[in-house]
Length: 265
Image (tube, rainbow, N blue to C red; front, side, top):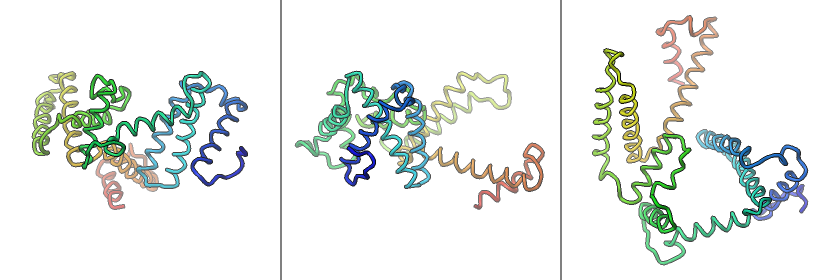
């Protein structure tokens, strides 16, 4: 295949990428040295860059980041073929078979009229495939916020869930009170940090659960707040610079003026 030819179908474009990967792996000094272990942290970085582009709603950047991530997937398959463990055909057929098996409402005679029924069937099928626990499919290395959300979704898939959101909010208030009981702000020496940390974790878990009932993704919500804070804080820094001051030299009241301006942008 001529790798310089622009292809116009998914299949030929994918073959072009595979051909380029073959060239890089055999000829490029950097690509020849890479292993799955050395690529791992780069893949995580690329995934977060895609996530950022999605949150920004930048479609052109999403397209670019999808390409970067696709390159990594092809790279792993190439390394797998070199060790004779698997190749790209194995990878693609593997996911095709999984999707067919886990969508019996499409490819068989199982009935599933709602999204919830699909999720319940999915978890039952995974248990039949050999998973010892419904929670076994939650990666141990997931960030805690995302992991809590996934754990709750998995438990819901087999019917372990609250009946309605009012019960969940009652749990939030209960956990908040328990946290306040441990965190005695009037006497810092009386704080049992371990207990306070445990209660704070319970409070966070219950808030994440409540977000699920409101169909709010807690990771997305927190990241949007992070971005909002960064934007406003950087406005504050720029305004301070215009006045010839550093933030350390400004009073909280002075900073609040610029902060309130930033909130109106």
